[in-house]
Image (cartoon, rainbow, N blue to C red; front, side):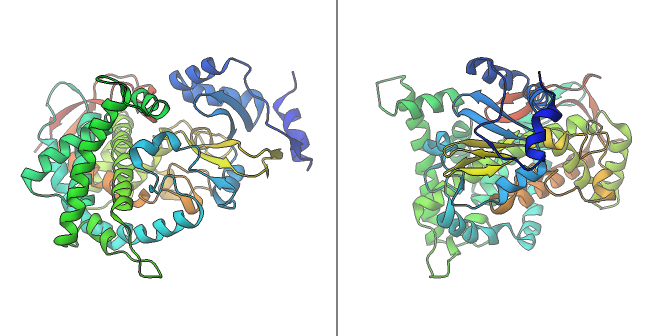
Length: 447
């Protein structure tokens, strides 16, 4: 069998190869199973065996080209938006987020929605959200059991959902919060199998059928969201994201209609709830196993600083990316990674392999937050939020929220590992989560 260097030599010499790169020959279902059970190990094995670009066959995408070189990821992220689409590969999400979601829009419509939403994520606005984030965290900390092993992820989910409710949607009244919290919890808790079944068979086949079950959950959430939108149009508030989105106008003076607002709120819910909660669970899972880093983080909290807290978050997202890849769909043939890839090809920039590569990181598997204090990473070697014009719009919001939650939790609780061994990751829905949910033992802070 040819070595990796021999396989990559034609591209390195300037020749452009035709078609998809090589990859595992296992049947598609087995490849999908390996990606689901041991994703990081499988991707790194493929990179060692087939080189920095390889093809994996798995449902629902079929044959997918994986990119593990930052230069290739950059080319995919910054390529022509008319060629590098995302809507096609994210269609399984359409029944939930809607066709007007930023996740599914491409080209001019994507840019228009992004410009309208961008002011809500501006730095000054983010600072205004921190006090409410802190209050939400402080209340949830009181619900964390003391002195026995507890999974932090459910508590982080409770915090991030409440942030969506109060900071993004702007619902504060108890009588309105309770039904909205319940409806959105059911929506975010939809199992992917049910969503796929509803997508493939969008017909009501009677009680218990996937479509009827799905629609009942979706319609209940939608009714409450449209009610909040209508109420906010009547009674502008101005201190939450929904109010800002209602005021946003494009160059022609047009704003977002109710359907677009609903789709973007659900997008912010799905993109900013589970992912941020999982990122926090991983952050604490890493931190409790590194006493020196924990001590320095606590010193940051006591001093009212946040540089090291930010570094801890970034290092955790590097070692344990919540989303393992970012997809693009080629509408035309493209020269990429030394190959001419055909149209209708799905291309995945592999966040996990790039961020754990010893080509770009010194001691890549070591937890060293200091690396984000000493220098900035090389371009496109740290990509937990993607890159280019489609970089996650809520990246700064998520980083701010994670820092605030860390600060408030460390201020009130001492955290210890529940077991000495680190947690393995598993794929839950579309996120890479700690297998035991970020298990710790919490104690009151001494003194």
